[in-house]
Image 1 (cartoon, rainbow, N blue to C red):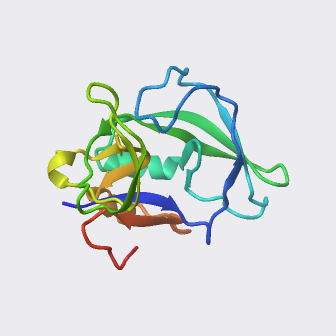
Image 2 (cartoon, rainbow, N blue to C red):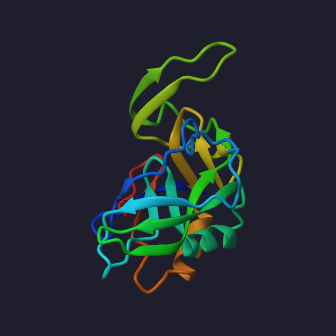
Length: 194
């Protein structure tokens, strides 16, 4: 069993530059958000009207296309909240069929001895929150991940981890334009597909 994270491939997509003001809501905290499900969020994307913006954006607030949400659900992933999103391009063009994405669940899954080039960003307490870390190449310990299909890493909450079972559904449901994503494998050895 392996794990990976999804990254934007800006060589074929366009970045989000403007986010809706949401105050203290943290889309990368791994916790349920107290936001009405029908809240429509608007994002500014650096995409011209005659292009396709992409399927995945991993900025301050992750955004996914309906097609990518379909692949997650097909893989059995259901621990997330979604909120309708509209992407607004550089010339005012609008794209619907997108969702602000909140993964729910934090797991202490890292193999610290095998994760490369790590630093402790904020120390943890004995009975308080765990230390926050940053690693150039985090390695997920499958035993600690306990077979979960998707979660955020408690020591690196921005790290959204997927079980490699999702790969099959990404291949089966791949849209004609491709996903416009890169997979970064979180295995002990660097994967040449990265």
